[in-house]
Image 1 (cartoon, rainbow, N blue to C red):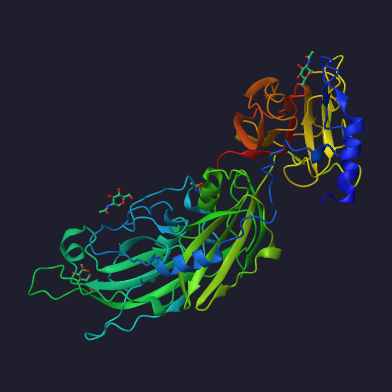
Image 2: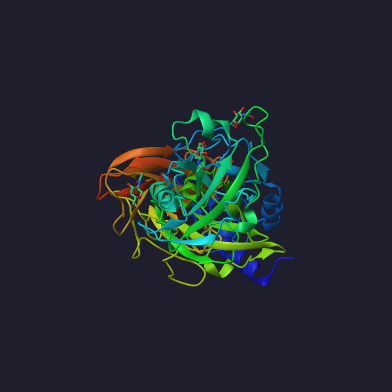
Length: 504
Ligand SMILES: *[C@@H]1O[C@H](CO)[C@@H](O)[C@H](O)[C@H]1NC(C)=O
Ligand SMILES: *[C@@H]1O[C@H](CO)[C@@H](O)[C@H](O)[C@H]1NC(C)=O
Ligand SMILES: *[C@@H]1O[C@H](CO)[C@@H](O)[C@H](O)[C@H]1NC(C)=O
Ligand SMILES: *[C@@H]1O[C@H](CO)[C@@H](O)[C@H](O)[C@H]1NC(C)=O
């Protein structure tokens, strides 16, 4: 049944229809400037649903149960290798090959992991069990293992081990122990020391001393390998990791992970690496309706008191601390949860600053955007307040004469400065919809993206619903951007424009 307001809308629509360009008297055209026009049937939508796609916390939690990121210095690799780059151990619930070769490498260095202050002081977390002939101990099998070295075993050389941790980017924890009956330590490596110093990008406890040796390294009658006097040291002060390039911190550290809409999926990282998570967000495939990743939530899963994995969840709608309410489940606790959103070089790319009315109105400019028409044109670029036209929110830009007064293209230009940095690559992204007047009349729809005066992208999509488009540009500083297009009745709506730094 038609509601009263819909009937009213149809009546207005019929009386306000304008003549089509070309003057075919028997044909009337509804224009975007017609109040109630959004009731017509052509618009195919693809609008953003602000409640769409919430975090799949169950899948994250069930994957935490499957993943095994616990490691220590193995018996075969030589000391002093550089720590590998951060890599993923699972993506969207599928474990990535667990042989710990780099299946994916972050583009970052390890400078934004759990971060210690330069020249850390360390606290002993646990002591060794003694050096007597029958004393046995275990070395750490834990997450975020980086590398190891051997230090002189003339003494139990804690200082040399902590100096090593200071030199390894991302190191916040060291495990010092003797390993006996290892052929490589005893006879092959030049250091001729069995005092191993294994370093980690997370802090571990004595509960994780689970590697007790047991390998046949030297030929019998030599015995199996065994561990003695294993002690652990943690950097005393952890500071906030540096914010990745192109991002701003939204919240954290908190003990809750986001349960928020606009969720795109997750990856597990082998360590708490904020830049690596940012790089995953930047390169995540776009969502058809939501667009590019704009926000990530990184957190550490602690199971039964032991660090287990580092989750990187990605979203096309920035989330806040108010939705960081998933504290874990059962044995699993969420720790070090931080949110970061991409810094937009453009302010108000969603036109939401235009609030000229409460239902339907439009303008050629307001504080954030300026619409211009070429000579002889009339209202060829406008901003509408009308949620039925918008991709998200209540306002949206329109290219093409709003009342079909002419067929000339209009230009929308931000009123304010674009906050770009010279020499940096940016991605301009926007949603476009050319579906107002239906198939046929929309055939000639077009939009050009103009960057510093040059056309860098042209979209000729014909009749099409809300669709994501992007183009990469390099900033020179003091940059300008404009969106030009429309050939009424081939109108194009434009919304949710962002200019994000392309790479971390
Ligand atoms: C006017 O438009 C109608 C509907 O599109 C079409 O059927 C008709 O042929 C047109 N007449 C002229 C003279 O173009
Ligand atoms: C280890 O992982 C890499 C990358 O995923 C793969 O190419 C390689 O075959 C794997 N090696 C083994 C021994 O499984
Ligand atoms: C990491 O940070 C340290 C200390 O701030 C700095 O000296 C070093 O150059 C950084 N490494 C890289 C690769 O940026
Ligand atoms: C020091 O390490 C070397 C090489 O593993 C070993 O032969 C030696 O016995 C160790 N010395 C002590 C005091 O443990």
